Length: 75
Image (cartoon, rainbow, N blue to C red; front, side, top):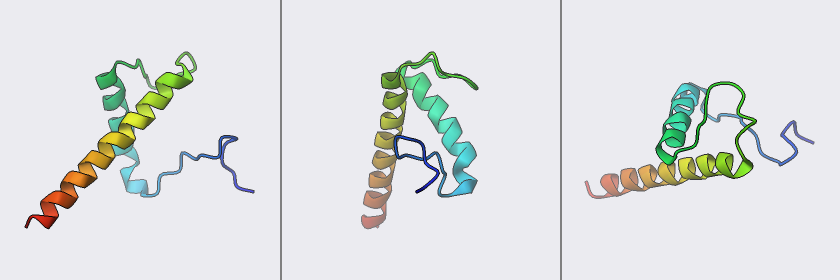
């Protein structure tokens, strides 16, 4: 059995060099969508708020990758 949380997910960063950029991105996204995410403890946020931040991060990362792929294929 793995050391993942009970939900079966992990906070492991696959590219450790990206950790700081992902943290910055998380706070930018939270600010953009109006979720009051702060450094440290965020137990006052609902699971819906936290999930929205994560989901929106994924959406924006997919959009960026699609754009990069389209730019690359048009060259």
